[in-house]
Image (cartoon, rainbow, N blue to C red):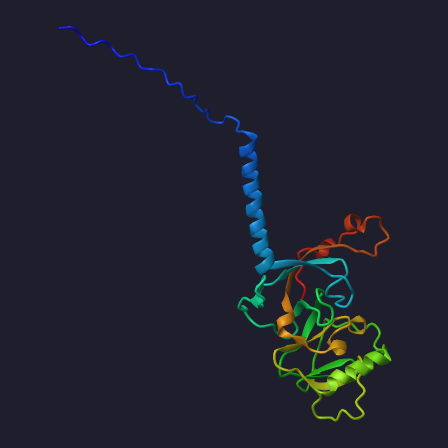
Length: 253
């Protein structure tokens, strides 16, 4: 019997792709675009809900925070704001006395300010000759600096202090009440509000001038200083030549 003819396999005309073969420019660009997009999404999430960079612009918190300090601010702790909807996430906890807060200015929209939390709702506050009195007790403030204790506010500023403080006075009449930077009160902190002061008491434009801080204005608290340089240095390019290495990664308290 005749044997069937052998069938010769047909050569595969499909070109093979060798491992490691260079890809086209389109594929390379697409991979980079995806990586950048993921990085941007992650950064937007972190920037919105977890942390934010902040630069110290003035000396109102010296010597705790110095001009030229760059901070990361923890936004999650007190409840981060959700963009576009104007709502906040639930706070991990409420701010506590003596903590440093970053908050929205009550006078200038868009401006962020950093001060120390001196009084919470229900606290009775006063100052006598530069000494803070809270709920009837003199408070030791090792962080406070009194560089010019004889400094007086301007007359119009004293008038403004008297105007807003008079309605919060306790135990005394507004008649004959003339507050100044070193002597004022006693006043009571209302609900959903805080009283803020700078550590550099004689060079700080704080709650003594503009009143109470609404709780809704609080944005966060400093996590750590990630960069610091002396902007008043005589050296050229102090951003590089006069770095305060000892302050980097320190936690303000």
